[in-house]
Length: 317
Image 1: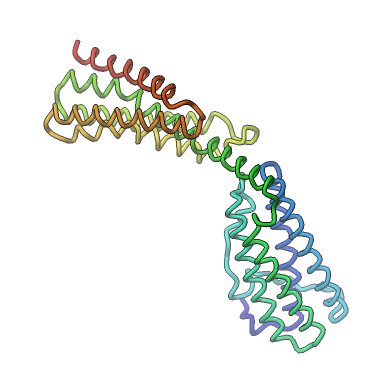
Image 2: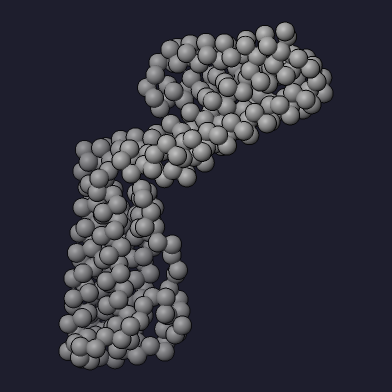
C-alpha cells in the first residue's frame, strides 16, 4: 500500500476517478436493492449515483487534458488511510438504516480525501476542481444524514409501514412460530416425565432434550421452507436461526425450574413460567399480528392447556 503523501498528482486524480466510479455503483446497488420496498429512498440513491458519475466525468476530462488517455490502476485499498468496509450492497434484503449510515460515512471520508488532495495539488485547475468536489461531497454527506427528511411525509409513512411489514415477516413470524412450538409442544414430554418420575433432575434432562431437539428441528424446517426471494421473508439462515433459538428458549423457560431439587416447588414455578409464556405469546400476536388480545389468549391458553393436560395424564398413568 502507498502512503497518500507519496502519491503523484496523476495518481491522485486516477484514485479520485476510481473512487467516484465505485461510489456511483454502490449507490446504484443501494437503489436496486431498495427499489421494490422503498422506492422513494431508491430514487434518492439514483440521484446521488448520477451526481457521482458527473464528478467522475469532470475528473476524467481534467485527467485527459493533463495526462492523456492512459489511466493507472489505483483504488482505495491500494492507499493507506481509507477505511475497509464490508460490502453491504451485496446483501439482500438491504437494511435501509445501514445504507444511510454507510453513505454518510463514505461521503465524510471522500470529502476529507478531496481536501487533502486539493492541498497537495500544485496545478490551480486541479486544486479548484478538488475543492469544489469536497464541497459537493459535504452536501452528499448531509443528504445521506438527513435522507428521510427529503422524502415526502406520505412516502415516509409508506416506507415505515413496509419496514414494519418486513420486520414482521423476517423476524417476528419465525420467532413467534418457534416460541409457540417451544412453549407448547415441550409441555407434554416435560410434565409427563415430571409426574412419572417425580425426579427434578430427570425432568430437567427430558425438558432440555426436548427444547434443544425442537429448536434444531424448527430451525431447519424454517430455513428450508423457502429462500425468501419471492415471499420477502428474508435470508433463510437468519429466519432459521431466529426460529430455532426462540423454540429452544420457549422450551427452556419451563424446564429451568427443575434445577430446583424440591419437586413441588420446581413444578409450581414451572406452572408460573408456562402462564407467563402463554401471555407473552398472546401479546406478540396482538402487537404484530393484529389479533385481539382476548382471542389470542384464548387460542393459546386452550392449546397449551390441552398439551399440558396430556402430559400430566400420560405421566400419571
